[in-house]
Image 1: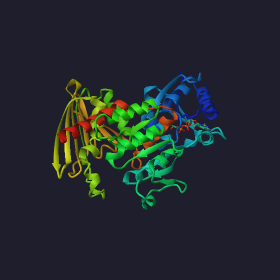
Image 2: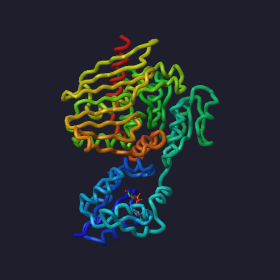
Image 3: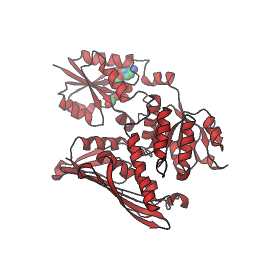
Length: 444
Ligand code: C2G
């Protein structure tokens, strides 16, 4: 039996794809199609894909000419698949001419002519409308957000809200047509699908709540609130109004971070025993205002290490904080958590102490090491007692990495999905609980 393999995104499946698959099948007896995962597409800079990986996968699965569909999750998978499935020919459109010649070592590589006059890009341009954003507050975060939004197709900033009448607008790279508001309700009454909220932690809860009540999807910097019950209330409103409410924790959406979770969950390092992660940033040296730093290390940073710990160990059963308070705020903190099956979490954060920002996940058979800055996950190492067995994974993490998160946010809105599998509502509530618990204990 002659086995053929081909790969693609297959967004908005069209006749060009079908022609390619039909000709590929005709070259053999058994056709395997690799459909790219959302994470892999995002990591290779494809930020304009409209359909989810599930929709794209299903569309290919339904074709009679296709015998087997697999998910393609990373760059070096093709080599592994060719060996695993004993593939006789690798077939791809000639827009990739010569690009895959390196696979000739393993199998025969065939480039077939593309069908002229049709492409996913063309269909998208003709049928997809922009998701419009309003930006709440002008600061370091929103500047970065606007810049990164520029990399995600079919989106734009329609307006900005800032309480102060200010010249700061010039600092945002805004489209000329973007309206500027100093009145929050007027801003929310304008035509936007979604708002991005950053700035002043104390007022965030009110800003998010009002935006939801005005029917807007919300992407909000971390945390939503530092008071008990408020985060849960926001999710209640979002659920009731069928709106997407997402925490802007970029790490959760980084392709390498998700690959890392997938690997650990296969059991490659055995049972996870403990997870240690550190995130420090000398914000004052980076030019952030004193008021911002006074929010404290826990409120500003704890959710990042807590995310990694929570993803792999689940919710905590007990928590202890070891903080250093100077001038009334925590310049550093370490949260030690216990989880089911004796698993331990150690999360260190600091705003006036600098340390190595790595993370380690220790298991009974080996460990995963993520070099600093682990929260901008670019690569990770899986290591064993025998050093020669080390495996290293490397991924793209372009710009500030917000584009992966924005891309997920926009895809979910298009799919009318109000929960991300990369950062679930329960996970966001658990992260918020840790911050609320700390603030309650600190103020006792
Ligand atoms: N194709 C075609 N004619 C078109 C459009 C696409 O023959 N008018 C082919 C492409 O050449 C490719 C396949 O259809 O072989 C899937 O195309 P895409 O969905 O654009 O996926 P692509 O980004 O090319 O994925 O690992 C992924 C692969 O490297 C390629």
